[in-house]
Image 1 (cartoon, rainbow, N blue to C red):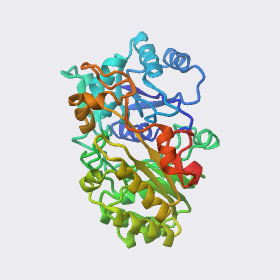
Image 2 (image 1 turned 120 degrees about the vertical axis):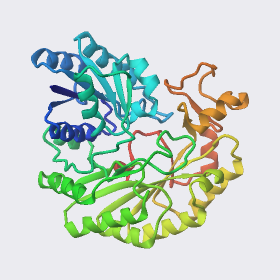
Image 3 (image 1 turned 90 degrees about the vertical axis):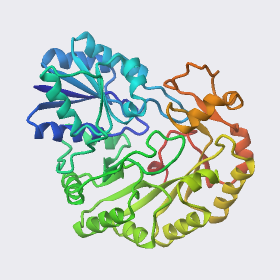
Image 4 (image 1 turned 60 degrees about the vertical axis):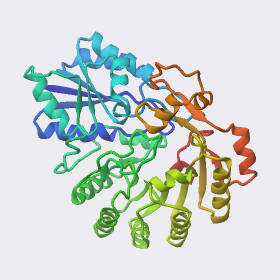
Length: 420
């Protein structure tokens, strides 16, 4: 069998290397499938390029990744599925079976599959599940449309020698950087996040180190970690940093972490492994802080460690959650004015996804429904973007004042590593 993997993501602020597809390439080759990767990120006419590819080469089946349903931010907002639907329908017009995957698909699999009119989809990791699916498909034993890759996780035995199927230099020249993973899933309980409370699968650290070594040997030395949150396990995080230090690979990297768990040893080894930027998501609502086992004392200690070990700290502050008081928002703003991380991006529009706690709250309370960015219907699927907000931009700007520490998230399209 011959498989074509397609990256339909044309977002360029910044462009993001499709590492999920690169990981699938390794997995499919392990199972002796022929595989090509078609990257449409920089194509002016994506459907034309896909048509030409399918006319010139025969493929048995096509896998299309959905990295994001939309840009998530209320400001500078984009809905991506409309353009991706054209790509899916182009493949269907060419009589091809289409399988969807990726984090965007996993966020709302039933709704996305129906909207895009694809054939099948895989939720969660695909390195083990996709080859299993292909075995079923070619033997005619398919009896469902959506398959659960979360039960298998990533293939821990794989060493990914990436870079041959994607033009990395084009991404780098357009402001992108390389990415990698140490694990998947997140143990946090954020009530607005589709990745919250998902099973955590850890990769073999020596294999990740070899993946990075291979990329650095090709001339790529700047990376952003693609884990949901790096420190799901404190021991694993420290062990990874120590292994990276011992490997002595000349690179620098940035990452996302949650406030806890942490220790000074973790921050010491983050600095030794050439981390230059940490982004931490924080909620002003102390109910959510409690759910995720941290408080302002923890945040003060984290800011201290970042300053001590000379690591830039970008805070992503979510505020204005349903039933949260204005005093809670003011407390958070005053805390960061006093303790001074590197930057604080303030988000006060919550993108609503089905099957999250915030969606359930909104469905039950008409007083919350009037604070949505479009009229609420009992048949609302939340596939096309809808946001909840208590505050206006002007209201938040008054609370922040003239302090340049704070940025309204999404007003400018840059991500944190471009602004530090």
